[in-house]
Length: 284
Image: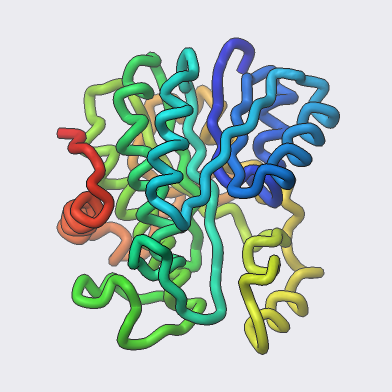
């Protein structure tokens, strides 16, 4: 990864931070993103120390605010190049809430914001031969059911695991449609299940009650962030997948997602709806 630049979102903790550290150890210029400056700077400094690589930088952006995603993209545009974009930022909430943009928070943070960031950086990525987009999805997409395009904001009912699962289904559908739209550009895009990882995404004050208790009980049986980051690093670096695009991976191997995650008509409709909601530029 010497001479390559990797942008990792949600990199102040968990698998994002672990992936950033491993990519830095391999010699990449790593640009981490975080929503909080103090936590982001602490994570950046820690990655610099643990990797022995001083070429680790920080950009700020809260994925619950679309204007901050646009500002993050504008800052990333000033980088000399981007070889790999890792869409990792995400959360799970025990109760429904809406962002200031008016969207259900899980859907925006886990899908709409990475969708917008990727679209805004697509031209930049196309400038680098062999650029890659890696999106962290999840096997949780198996448990949320199909997307309800009449209720993408989960206003009718809200169940945390189902809403999270549908946001991860959206990640897979996004990857499939993105691969179609980037065909012939030299940019590949793949997504992955990192495993059930002991991270803070469902436990840093965002979850409460029984849901938070279940997360705490399960934590000792979860993977470490370093193990969870392995497939991210594989998709970002391995020559074995240099020409692979639009696929879903787990444990560094291609895996077939559910039937509803292979619905290309739903993928196209989701793209159109997401572009309308975010005002993202077209890729066609």
